[in-house]
Length: 231
Image 1 (cartoon, rainbow, N blue to C red):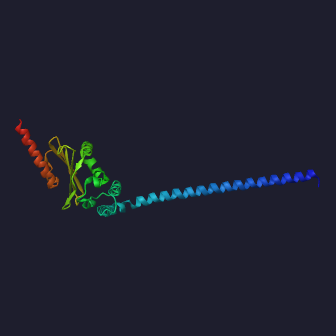
Image 2: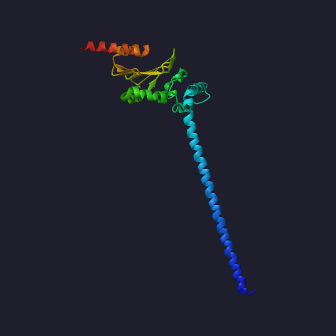
Image 3: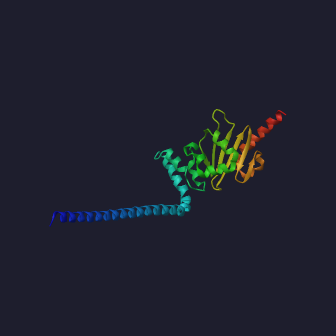
């Protein structure tokens, strides 16, 4: 066999081997892309299924949320979790009930981010409308939350200016109703889910808790006497 024939055979073998390698490489790339596609599909399927599960469990979550909140409050009171952990949870709590408020007795509103709990915050926005920002701005000093006979009571006022403006928030836990009283420039106004805002307590007396109605009555009468005195 001549040298030329040997070289020719070598070149042919080399070219054939290159062709086979490119095919192997192409097959490898195809398999890799197929594998990545399958993994991506599994990932998005799992995300989609998780969203469906969340939607299906939303109703059951809302029903069990008050018990979960009550347990977390007990753990915080026992110093087993921080107030930060509790506040972080409450800011995203999903519940339409006010039953969980029973466990807040003795705590300060700031301990539980009371005004920012979605179930409380949305009610305040709906009732107060343009007075919502006023309350949020000047609710600076506060007293511990009281819960007695199914009624929650808490109050707050502007720092170094007690007590005007002054705010009272009450909740009838069984009736699932929230009430607000605001004292501004000497005039009390009651906000109730059952009536329009009123600066005349006698019109909403039967629609609000007695403690809030009596507070508004005394301030309204004092305001009227003062006005009459300087007429």
